[in-house]
Image 1 (tube, helix red, strand yellow):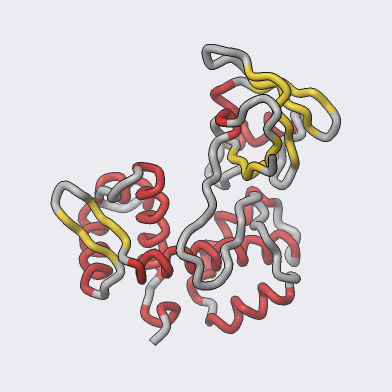
Image 2 (image 1 turned 120 degrees about the vertical axis):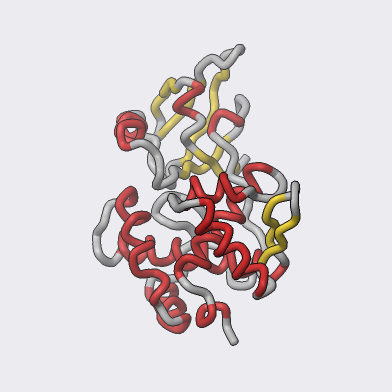
Length: 223
């Protein structure tokens, strides 16, 4: 039986949250952190984790937190893939802004049959990224590429910009004035010491961005 049939909305959202929390913490995800990410009570997370553990998607061990099994990891990546495809559909076919697609995708992505997801992907000409600039993983992929913050780059590095849908709208508006939008290529010209600002080349223009805001921008290095 496919995971698209047996996994509920809460199951998929939990798997995505466990995957992301595990990457951020470089270890198991803890129920308190998962509850905060999902916006639910710790008791609800505990029940969801138990259900996923009973089905073989996660391991939950004391003091180590929640860890995805190989099947759980594949299912988490599949859920992320679906979300990003639906976001691309909302942006490309229905005209929603990239920073609106994230919220709307979650409202109906879980009801899609797998064949509909596959047809949407083909109809969109097999896009490589979601509207935020994050890669759409291939089917059966077991992991996603690292997307470090912009501030992790060094002078001479070039990268493609990605911006999370959870980013503060005021920060998004400020980034837009600098030309820092999803899919834009940037080159680091200077990086001032002691958490100083970055000087970037964006669309042929030099822009300066502070370290705090630069940590809200994610990148996929190209050189």
